[in-house]
Length: 191
Image (cartoon, rainbow, N blue to C red):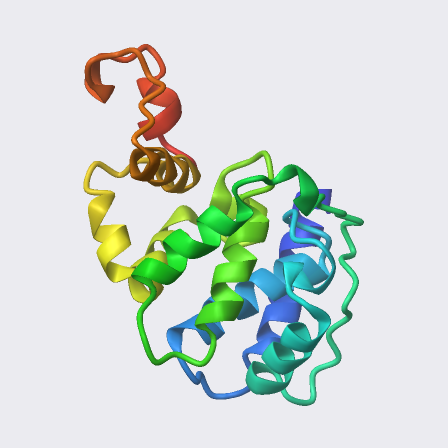
């Protein structure tokens, strides 16, 4: 059996164990996918998914009671948040557009911000299984912000573009995205 198939089988086994409880919210589903990948050493999320230890314990107790989920990343990922000067800006952007009244919104924000430190597509860095999962997760938790991505820009690029526009920074020299030579890097397929 190939390594990729072994990872997929292992990830799906972990996922089925995590999903043994009834869904509490759509985030429960996405967190189960991310944790299954994370427990299999996939994605870039660091120890405790990038959350504070207390947040991680609260998240796992809330959504996955009785599951023994390790606090350490099996991937060995040690993201360095000190190199992420924009961490606070990303948190503030997401909080500004967050859907109110969900217990888990702060957890989701911190996990997404941790995923932004990775070097791959955001859905892959988070350990989600497809870009459509990420799109659905962002639409559920940040509906107004997600609606702004009406040209289907890649999500990590989109979030950073929102930060630049909020600061009045327009680094691209092209008059519009459609004529930019990097257009395929921002709007192409991620699958």
